[in-house]
Image (cartoon, rainbow, N blue to C red):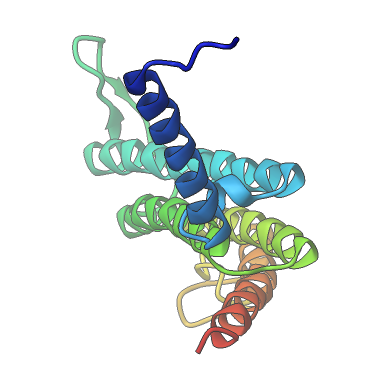
Length: 196
């Protein structure tokens, strides 16, 4: 004859089963949708985060370039001061610094938002790559535009200066990336409207 488990054992097993059922319900209800992502979507999520961190780090490097540009020298105490002419302008490096940091934060925020919306596998894939392209397109725009006399606002001469290869790279990168940014907004907005 099988012995009946002690009451405290039965209570512990019952509580564990209750917690497991609660966790399953929470996941199914979408409160913890990150755990509900397919393996492929999880790969895209982490890929966007990785690119976002790199873009943000480049923005931090632009902050160092801003410091060197203000000092007209590479000054890293206690190393000797290396007087050198830093290309670009103080304004351009400040823009690349702030813009790069905001770009990285934008990518992380939007990919996290995407996990909360009911995007299809295809839309999640399209949105992920569009975010990556957005981050790098803006980064190239900030850095190349800082080196361009016309600030990368056109492939032709502007009121700020003449056209060159850096201006063309900045303009085409920023302009092309803009379409991917709007496409991500469309995907996320459409998914949000389904819940309105």
